[in-house]
Structure formats: structure tokens, C-alpha cells
Length: 546
Image 1 (cartoon, rainbow, N blue to C red):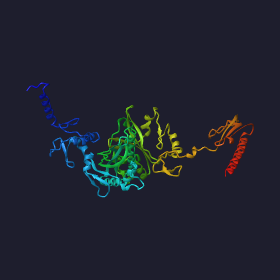
Image 2: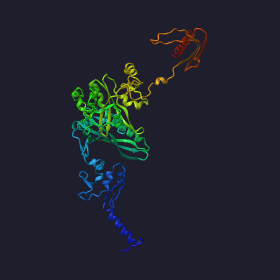
Image 3: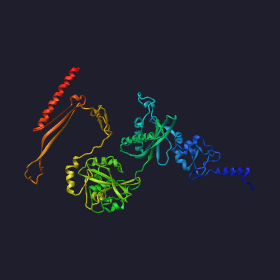
Image 4: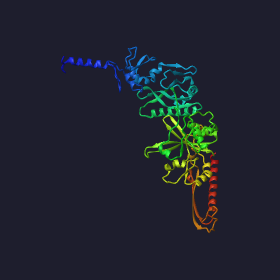
């Protein structure tokens, strides 16, 4: 039947054709199309904009079929069908996690989220017990991230240690869920803050990384509140801890040197097929060989001469200090970075700088390629860095203790003997405390003005000035083989003037001047006389007041 555009039957046929097309439910590159007749509620659209696309997709998906279509996966916990594209997001969504929580066997207020996917080992939800708070803290008081993490610290340490014992290497990240309020608009909403990934293995100092976690979330929440959104922290709901499998190195840790670094012939790169590149690089520096220096076999006879204690392979940068103490030696570790402007690789760092240079000292180069890391031995620092530091073709000599460079070996030796060993840089630390002006012990890594006594005016100040003329001094020739100083002029004082200023009574202020012989002694005589007079007046005034 031929329908005209003006016919009402045409509209009915067009609507029917559109409905048939929309009912086919296909997935496109931009997301899932909804069926004709789906109702999008305000909560659905809000979920789609709340960093949780899986919830929006889930609410818009009809769940009538028991068997999922080919392009969908069924979630047994939620009893819904999710498109393959959104399934991984769904497993990490709040909707799914709430349905797979179970209590931890030994730790209170800790729940296990049985939603492991991919490389995920376990996920935990850690909440703060209200009885954990001090009775002096009001229930209306906002708990800061620092206080919250301090209260749940022991639980986090217990979970980390259990997973490290079980898996040796793990990667952990935290997600903090908090409730915010806009007081002016009377709005309340919850937001989650994703943390960075932290890798752990046996023997690591967990407390050191935990301090970084606390600072990280404290900064994230502070930056969020400082924005123009008007949101203020109301309370912290809970913290999710995700534990993932972590293989720091896959196969060999060997990484080939860039061509420009290789041409300098200043770095020895051991071709290892294991994770012990740090050990081979150190052995190459302690026990050098003339032939096949890049082969592991050349250093096997001395392998057991190094003490690694409880340090695990691959060796992390934080473990280098422990290795130095175990083997009575010092090590500097430098990195490599490509400069887009010069189109060359440049040495950066040091990534690890020894605090005390020992007679046995080595310099290592640390290469990275994704998650893979590799240590090499730096044989000649001058050849490696000369073009990067200076345009001269002359060799430079670098001090391993302070990284200063010199034009010749003699100057370097003189510096290391007299200067470098006597200079020490001590960085502030949160663990070291110092008493402030009030006698309270505060962290030494925070600078705060507390010398309030320096702001108070002193009762008396003396401003003095001398005038002198110079006369030449006859001298004789000195021994050129010995250090000496030539005195060529003498200052002869012929006048002075001083002003004695009182801060609270200008009647006690006085100006005195003199010109003549023996000026220094006359100055002391006049000043002593004035001070004695002032002291008597002050004592008399105090006596009359009392």
C-alpha cells in the first residue's frame, strides 16, 4: 500500500518499524542500545554518571531469559545477565560487591568480598568499629583519614602478612569510600577514592608503605574539598583493600642497553637468565674478569661470597641499604631516561644514594622495561657522564660521595680526603622529634615558627659606628714554600658615635660621640658609664613600684 507523508497510517507504520528494530538489542562500539519501551528512572541515569557504568547497563538490561545470549554473561550472585563488555566492571561495582560479602573468620568488622577476577586474589572491606573511638571524641566529630587508618592499621597489617605468607609477591591497592555533604544545598552523596598500587614481598617494611597510603588519601580528600564543588567530608564509610597476584619479573630480568649507552663502553651488562641481576652486577664489580665479562659463568665461583640475608630476588631499591649493611660496602644506583629534546638517553638519579661511602664502593645502573627491572655495573662514571655534564672533551672525575666532579684525579683525591668525608647531609624524618618553644615534641620534618621570644623587643639597643684611617705596614719577604698571609694596612680609629635606644622610655635614650686618641678604650669607658646609670635607674624604679 502506498502511503503519503500526510497519512496517519504512515506514522503508525513508522513507529512499528522502529520498535521492531530497537527490539533486536545489539551491542555497538559506543555502548549497549536499550530496548524500545525501557524506562530510564532518575536513579538509573545517576548511576551511569557515578563512575559505575555497569550499574547503568545492568538496570537497563531485561532479565527475562534464564539462558544468557551469546554476547552476555550471567552473574550467579546477582542473578542478572551482563554484556561481556561490562562484566569486569560489574564484578567491581558496588551493586555486586554488596551481594558477595561474608565475615572474616578472625577479624571483626572485616568482610571478604568473594568477587575475585583476573589477577585478583581477595578483596576485603574494612570498617571502623564505633567502640574503637575514644570516649572523648564526639560522635558528631569528623574522623580524618589519618585517624581512620590509624584505627584499622593492625587489621590491614594482619591481612597483608597473611597474603604475603601465602603468595610471596602481592600487589595491593586501597579504595576509600566516604560520605560528603553540601551544607548550603542540604545534599549528601558518597564518593570513592582510588589509591595507587603498592607491591609487597617477604621482608618488606610494611609500615613505610602504609605511611605513604595515609598521606595519599589525606591529600586526595583535601584536594577534593578544596575544589569549587562545595562538598565537605561528613564521614568515612569503609576502606576496600584489593589484593592481586604479582609477578615482578616474567622470565629473565635481562634488558639490553640502548645503543648510545652501549657505544660509550662504560657499562657492563651481564646477560643473566634469572632474577639475580643485582648479584651478578655486584660480583662483576668486586671480582672483575678479562674475558667473557658479560657472561654469568665468569662469576659463579664467587657467587656464595655475598650475604643477602632475608633479601628476596629480584632486589628492590629499598633493599639496597640492607645489602650494604650486610656486606660492609656502599652502592649508588642510577637510572636511565630518554630526553625527547636531545634524542638521547641520560643518566638520572641517584635512585639510591648511599649515606656513608665505604672503601668498597660500586655504582650500578638500573634499567626498566614495563614491570621488568635490571641492574648493570657502571665501570667508568666519567665516560658515562662527561658529555652530559660538560661540553669539554677532557675527562672528568666524579666523587662517589657527593657527586661533585673535578678536572683531574689529584683534585678529586684531595676533596675526598679533606672535604667529602667530613660533610654529611641529614634529611628531616617524621620519626625524629625535637622540642618546640612550648616544650612539646614535634616531628622534625615539619618547619613551623616557634621562636616567639625573638618577636619581643629588647629593652635597650646600642647602635655604634667607628671611623678610621689606614696606614701602610712594612713587611718582609715570606717563605714561598709555606702558606702565609701579608698584612699590608692598619686601621687607626680616630672617632666614634653610638646611640643608646630605650624601647619603653625615650628619656633613657642617649647619643654620644667622640673624636681623639685612644678611641676604643674611650668608647668602652663611656658605654660602661651609661649602662651603670641605666641599671641604677631601673633598680630604683622597680623599688618604687613595689
